[in-house]
Amino acid sequence: MDTSDRACVGPRITLPRARWLLLALCLLLACTPLTVAAADNSGSHTARTAAQARWGDKRLDEVTMLATHNAFTNYEDARWSSVSQAESVQGQLDRGVRGLMLDTHWYERSTWLCVISFGSDCYPSDVYLCHGGCKTFAGITYALPRQSFHRTMQTVVDFLNAHPQEVVTIFLEDYTTAGQLGQSLNKVRGLQELLFRPDVAGVREHGWPKVADMVTANKRLLLFSGDFGRESFGVMNERDWTVSNYWSLGDLGNDVACTSRWGDIPLDRKEPGFNRLFVMSHFRNVPTILTAATDNGSKLRDRIAQQCRPAAGGRNPNVVAVDFHQRSDGSGHTPRSIVEELNSR
Picture 1 (cartoon, rainbow, N blue to C red):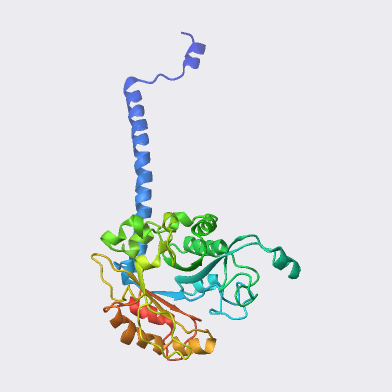
Picture 2: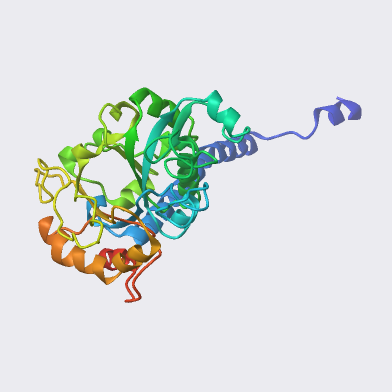
């Protein structure tokens, strides 16, 4: 072989050297998946550690969350003349609210309302948040701009995605059909990935999971309705999963007795291996800032200790729902601080 032939062939690789190259290549291919798996495990471990630090070992039925009554009637999301909360749904979530009470109604598009409003009330048929009816009195039973249910739920889902340690529960006073509600929820991007379904998780047989486990699994949204027939798309009937006191403190705010909302489901109901979530309502027939300030401080704290906890068989409420959640009586106790106190025990 002449010099030019040798140049084309290149350097000779001896057999031992070829074996070493082959071995190195095999090791590289074998180790690559292990490196990815180790990274995945590390991320999962970090998420679980953060969830454990946030929630400890408490199950869902052992924690208390602050909720807002008629969360959608506020001055920021629409032009309501009478409200139960001061800030938007987003603002409520940002300030520590983890339960929202919403009224859902079906609204059929009205050409008449579109005409007489000079084009300001030309909304499509859909599920909206209204208080008594979606066509009766603007500012009182509904408000403009109309608040679609799916947009409000998108706000909740986006909040949860931005705050991966948090859990939110939605309570619906529902005047829709199952088909209408399901159609609306189908418009919410990312909802199904976050939805925790106690029926599928076997909660009735095994009890509620630890909140840290829910967070780690990214199942951090619960939906309850006052109506049946919505379970197929993850909306549970509250009579199957909760106990609840009668909602009103009365006109004067002096009805502090904690009696069951449903006569056949007492607050201290016990079932083998399963605790219903205790939803405590604490608000009057007509919300005002002044009466909420009177009700939301030491009065709320005393009512839990002296009335509601004993009525529930010694259990703290899992949800405390109030009007104007930031208002208090100046006692140093606020709805949020009371909830934090209950969770510190």
